[in-house]
Length: 103
Image 1 (cartoon, rainbow, N blue to C red):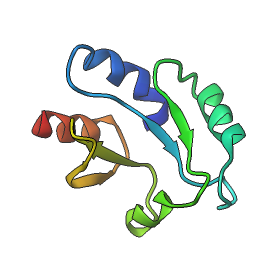
Image 2 (spheres, rainbow, N blue to C red):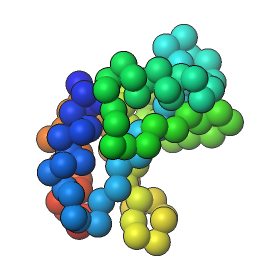
Image 3 (cartoon, one colour):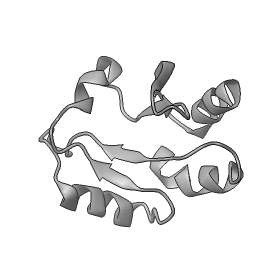
């Protein structure tokens, strides 16, 4: 659901200090993704205005809380993860609340 709504969130916060980046942390089978998986994700969810990256090193999967997906990381203007910045989310409302709290 969140992947489908990212384009609307991008439009909603246009002009704010918010940048969205989608990170594919693993494949559907739990393997480390490659660039082709990021491309497939973007195409599957019609994501056009947000970069979709693949965690080809398997680094960020370690930050996933309790294996819950999706997880959104809040990164401040200094490019440092905001304290408490990993938000396990089922939808846009959680992300919107986190953004509004940290803007």
